[in-house]
Length: 530
Image (cartoon, rainbow, N blue to C red; front, side, top):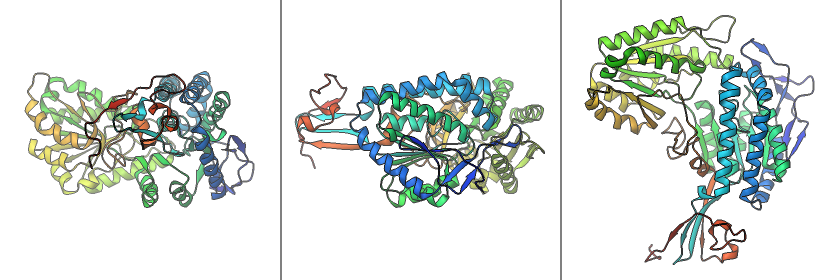
């Protein structure tokens, strides 16, 4: 953070790129070259944030008059523009994150991003996400409506798919009819700026209010807490570190503001004895591929593996250690991630884990050597909180239990996680253990997998990318999976005996567009039950 010596990048307020009045700025960093990039981005003060909130509140009022077709049209035009600018976007993101240009950025993450925008457009157009419900006898009707301006805080590890101005939270908020205030992640501000430029072009082409999408790059912690508690804001979507997320949650909770958080997850993987005996070498390959993919910088990275003590378990550990040591460590997203990873490893070692390999930062690079740790279940149970420290990156902890009851006790001590998976033998030899362990694990996770590593998150209507705290701030919602993800940014409104022409279109018996909306038609025999 430095006093600006030259013009910094502009912020997007009310449909215009304006010079920031900030006195401080920051620069992004290329972790692949260990060089600071030249562009300077402002750290906005409260005056700019206040102006953004005013513009968002005005846009929210105007969006009420925008048809679902207009909102869907914006999302589709925006998706097309992203696809058309794939190479340019990929090059900026690659410079800021060192993530591979291809296939990761251009061929995988970017198509996922435009694809989920199109899915959100379909949800906006259909209206079914709003769950319109009609009791015709009592003339009581309800549906979800836009909650108001949504502030989205994007993470560092997905410059496209979870970007604050293009990712899943953004798509869901817009599809639900809300304007978005995007707070860029400081690891990829240039990528976010380019996306915002395309979003502004799509707004112009689709006719939505100019303040539908706004962008600031950074603010003080105090102003961030003030922002999420502001009365003009409807809700908040946040993906990032637990500490920062809980600070924002405290501010939002104090005023009853909905805030949806994705915070921390070690994603336990249970490898049962029959599975190890049946296909141990293949499981080593699956695990190593999963934990080292993207240098382990996924929120669904398998950071905790649970085994029953056996010769097959020892062989699994030895083979994994060998592959970890042989694999070239990948580049981390930032020196901050590098520092957090080595700190987490030290926390695990202090708790009683043993270092099998790795654990140290690599001099002159934004890297940490591939890290494998082990611990007994007995030690884990003595300090379960410390042993669940998230080592975000190319690291994992293996915990060895004496028997099934001890392994069950470990599962009972787990915090909430996004995912949990169990590998079992195909011949049924692990079924008794599975029956004991699976219900315990399912209570601790948002998504239970069988015989599959957790890293991939399909953009499917059935997907739950959520889970109990601290994986997220609320176990009843998902950040991935349309239309379910839209409900986070909706307000349930009931209309009791309201005249037809005063109802929202999707609750009218006959609406001016002639469109037949899908709704649940209820005719209760007793409508005045207290």
